[in-house]
Image 1 (cartoon, rainbow over the protein chains, first blue to last red):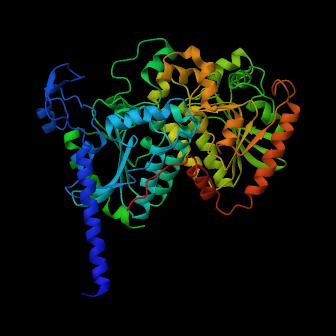
Image 2 (cartoon, rainbow over the protein chains, first blue to last red):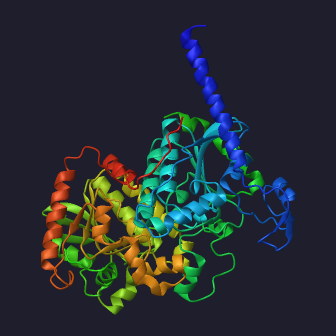
Image 3 (spheres, one colour):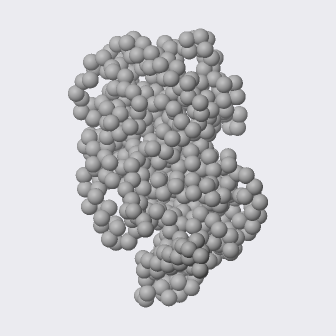
Length: 294
Length: 269
């Protein structure tokens, strides 16, 4: 065999092995409990985990969408063996030297097996390559510090460079307090990246999941070409408790829920989890030319 | 530079007599034409907007307004903008872009208003789209943090090519009270929060978030604002002149914010 072909074959083999390892590692880190049951926060009834796996963690009794981790989310969307995680080891130092932050980070990493609150990957959905970013609310409430801001920004830049559509699932308490002003700056950084991507003709689908508030709502999550939300998701800038303190009265029923945002014009459609894959597939198909022509 | 604790600077930054956006506008600009309304819903007085001359050249000026007496405070919602304020700011920025006018912004807000109507009309969307728009402007943008730089409500006017900050101004992810209440469930520990948040001009200069710190007289800018106006005038002039040599101001701004926050990564094989 020609040396050129041999080196190319070796490289492809190496890539394939890497990809398989990535899938395996993701499966290991998966957040799916094997047995037992949990109480649905929506209706208070017991749900068997075996049953929840089948319903994609939607309560079989009341339809409540239980929060799910980033890897589980990706496994519900991506075609088998197409998952390739990007920058999995990326973390941020304790730049503000905030007391106790490193220990807290270590504990969260131990608990969730995540490096920080965002997972960014490329993979195929119904045969169409795209870039996916998912925030995981189990890690510091999905809050955005430098690591999340950098990963999202790199994901956007990667999508632009490779002319791929971008899909971001948000679930976040907002800016990460412990990284202070640098967390705030990630709002500008991620929004600027999305704006550049948009001007280059890229398609960005933003999906709000429960709960998304603060600095994430006030940056990349609100800048989608298409904006979707999971049913019942809490979405807002200020948290309900803060608003209640400000105005000193009870908040109306359903305030800041996905349905409320849809009614007020901030969401294109509310999509149940079990229809999400199909909806995204439809949207990617509708934009095939738009993503590639520039 | 004087050696005050962060909590003391928080108090100076919020002092009622401290020069606000309107004072800077009166002392630094001429030929001021006030622009009002977002063309969608209403006029939000908590964000001031105008076309004016700076050393003879037309510019667009936008800044948070708290008001100088109680009546004005009420009208301006104590400097906490609603989505309409940010949408007005966006309108004026697009207009500045159209006519090639540099934009000067003054930051002085406790934060965007956390109210029911503000949520209903999309406070998050209004801030997000301001960030996106500001990042893409091709005219020079110089931001001056003059008092309180509170959270996303401040940042929405602060995506500048240059960020200048007064010595006793503060700029942070959240108010010290909010910070203490989130992290320690105790808003009364605000002074302690201020000391760990790195919110002073000096801290932010060291973190690379601001480009220049303007010294204030002993006790704060309100004691004798004249040298402060003069120093801010000189700083804006210098930065505008430097930026006029920059070829792609949107790319310059992108790189500036792109670089904020260092990360660690294991080498991947």
